[in-house]
Length: 152
Image 1: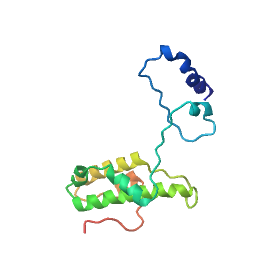
Image 2: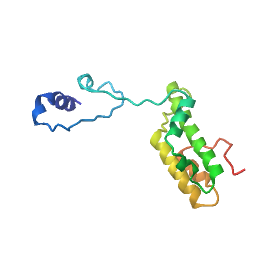
Image 3: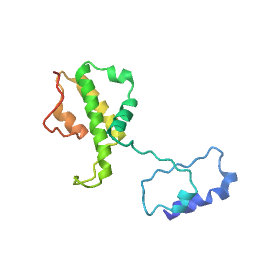
Image 4: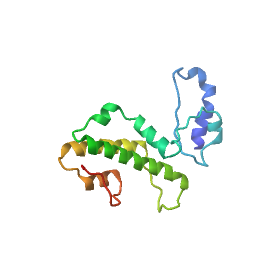
């Protein structure tokens, strides 16, 4: 981190030798060891998950095209499962604000996990006549608590 700090702080001195299109993007989680001077000399952007179940669900569904939602040979089950995965994602995102209460370990189910779950769901549903529930549970990490979406 000290080396990073030296490099970043020396960039203005080298402005003439740096290409005009050069940009340095750093991604970081909050960390006490991250150099404050780097933050002070930077433009900061953050992406925070929306607050509340409704906002999380809306954001998940706004990222889906109508074509993606309608593109299935089993539309009834497909749409129910899309919503179920989105609801699970929203629940996990909202649950993070409570910290370790009720969780043995920190559980992540971020946007890329949700997107991957949608992709795997699509592959599984189109590949077989029956919905492979066990495989879906295993691949997505969603634990079946007794109820499940059916064709009915």
